[in-house]
Image 1 (cartoon, helix red, strand yellow):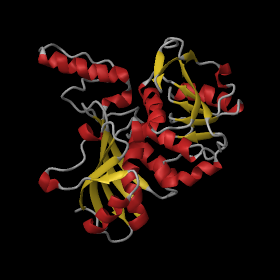
Image 2: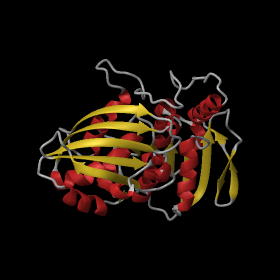
Image 3: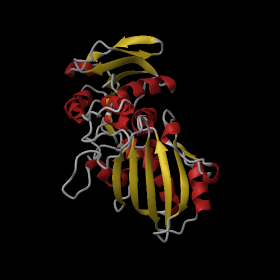
Image 4: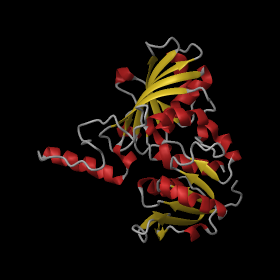
Length: 334
């Protein structure tokens, strides 16, 4: 655990979308940073990040980068995490990793603080951040599980292009402009145009027909909720939204459930806001959850296909609760 009053912090991938959000969240939440070391590839080295009114130049990532570092946030992709996280641990830093590389390792805690924060006590210098869509969905699924015992879920995600990085944001913008100019859209990040379209394809396909992204809710959900029998059938869809993911969930529970009881549970859940007045057109939407720390849940109703079932809609900022905010919350637990 972290024991000093202020800490030497490294951010690997500081110039990326998640890295930039990490810097902002550390400052906004007043995390006790003695020194901030932004790290990047050689291509981005020298770019500056703004922290507490100071412009700090990024340094090129190297094996020597972690000397004297207490805590290292990794948000530069799986290959970088696989190569450098062990080096950071060996140098004495605690690593909080945003990639998928270590999430299923049995000796690496996979943590959402509102759900299984106590798991950080068992870390061995490395803690994994969950998949962004899984994190957003579990913020609503878990409190309902505690009350009613979740057995399985069927879900469809509506995932913003920022989950694919800055190039995807630019591609959506350019395709919208192309449509306005009545010119042909150029698709490079995705296999098809994303503007005015939806793609039932997030991540690579597995032999069973699901994608890697679709299996994460079941596999990671089992670890985070300590529920090895949990089952989830998910279809992940990329939509022409810039920021914030949404998930439509149908969940089956062990015990009978009512909408009124579900509302009471969800209204009290940490990190979650109940926005459920459909008659007044009030329900969660990515346009309004973008930039918010809390996820939102609404459209809560009895599921007409399950005996003990609920259907509901969750929306949350995948750069915050799905990545940077969750990582900083883990650091705060330490």
